[in-house]
Image 1 (cartoon, rainbow over the protein chains, first blue to last red):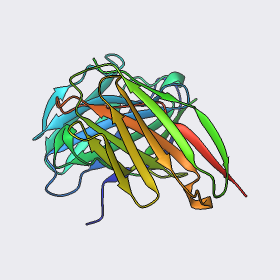
Image 2 (cartoon, rainbow over the protein chains, first blue to last red):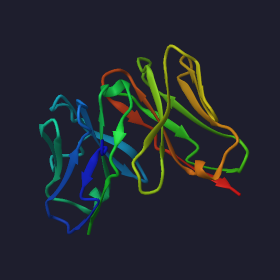
Image 3 (cartoon, each protein chain N blue to C red):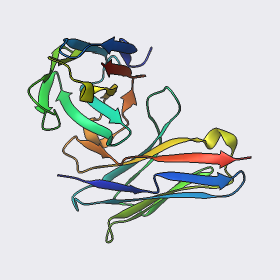
Image 4 (cartoon, rainbow over the protein chains, first blue to last red):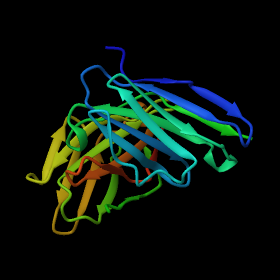
Length: 114
Length: 111
């Protein structure tokens, strides 16, 4: 298996623009997690899905952030409008055991908002 | 909700010496404690985990200990090597499917 695939790897955009980050989980995994990594706050859980259903989005910073999982092989994280403080590395991870087993992370999407 | 504190934020040890990273958690219902290693430009990878029904687990040069009463758990790396240089994260899960991470420890192995 190719592992968790994220795109784009790098994105530079201007404040106010819409940003869409994409994730393809490992086939057969039924849980998907979005994390944000910054130096100050470490790895923050934004939202997670079980069987394509959003279970907990309490970590989503504000209404500018939204996430979808239309099917078992694809998820998006959207920021609209983007702000400089959204600059971070965004990771997608998938698991076959939800919160009780190994998370497999993608290589991340580094977002810079100017 | 769960809160995980991790110390130190940076650690430098001489090659061949041992490294210890400590974490505390807040939710007494937490029962799964993984450790992840993140190399530059990569996503974190699981290196070892421990569940609440055991107090210690070892895998070659790495070991984890868990004290449920004190809500402490630690990672021990012995005979450190240059390839151990990375960022290490502890995490905790209370079985509600959420894995909450500490802020990470940047480990430097000095030649």
